[in-house]
Image 1 (cartoon, rainbow, N blue to C red):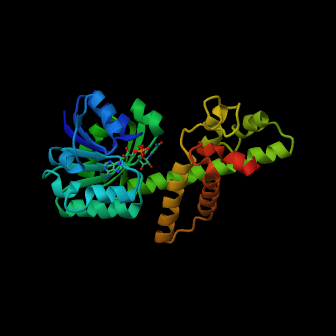
Image 2: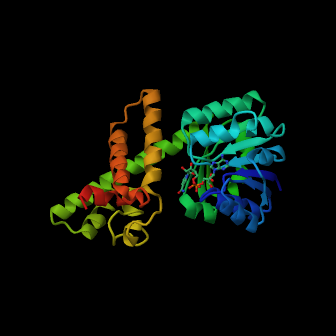
Length: 295
Ligand code: NAD
C-alpha cells in the first residue's frame, strides 16, 4: 500500500481521498477549509497543516483544486509541492484546469526530476463517491503505469490520452461536446413545444433516430422521458451550469491559443454565461432549457 498525499479535500477530493483510504492506502491530506479536513480525518485520513507537509512524506501526491491559479500556487514557488516533494515522488493533478498551466507545471516538475500527470475526471460527485470516475490522463508512459493502480481505487475507466496536457485537452473537448449537445437538444424540445409536438413523442423518435445523444437519452432536459435526469427535480445539480461555463471558457481559451475554429463552442459559452448571469449558476446545466424557453 502506498503513502499518498492529497491536496484539496472538497466535493470531489473528499470522496476520492476516502476511496484511497478504503483501498488501504495511508493518506495524508490538506485543505484550508476545516470542515473538509474533519470529514477526511473521520474517514481515517491524517491531517497536515499545509500543502508542503503533505508533499514532504508522500510517494504519490494527488491534488483536486478549483482552477489553474490554485494549481500554480500549490505546486510552484518556494514552499510548493515541487520544491518539497521527496525525490522520485509521482505528482497527479486531477483538477480541471487550462492545458497551458498543466504543461507548465509538468515541465517544472520534470526539471526537478519529478514525474507529473494531468488526470482530470468525469463522473461528478456521484462518481467520486462510488469510485467510478473516468480519468483522462496526460503524461509519460512510465508515470501512467505507476499511477494506474492508484487511480483504479478512485475510478472505473482510466485512459492514457497522451503526453502532458492531453488529459486536460480531452476533458475540455468532451465537455464542449456536452455543452453544445445539451443546447441542441434543449432547442429541439423548445421548438417541439411551440409546434405542438409532445415531448415524450420527440424523445421516443429522436432517441431511436439520428438525433440520439447522451444529453437526450441519459440526461434529458425535460421532465418525464428519463426519470433520473435533473429535469425531474427542478434542475437540482448534478453538474452545475457554473462548472459547465468554466469548462467552456477553458475550451475557448484553448481554441484561441491553438488557432482552432469552434464557433458553436463560442456561442454555447456565451449562452451559459448569460444563463449563469441570470442567477442560475448553481442549477444543473440542463436547466439551460428554461433560459432558451424564456422562462
Ligand atoms: P470544491 O470547491 O468543492 O473543492 C476544491 C477544494 O480545494 C476546496 O475544499 C478548497 O478549500 C480547496 N483548496 C483551494 N485552494 C487550496 C489550496 N491552496 N490548497 C489546498 N486546498 C485548496 O470543488 P470540486 O467540486 O471538488 O472540484 C474540484 C475540481 O474538480 C475542479 O477543478 C472542478 O472543475 C473539477 N470537477 C468537478 C466536478 C464536480 O461535479 N464537482 C466534476 C468533474 C471535475
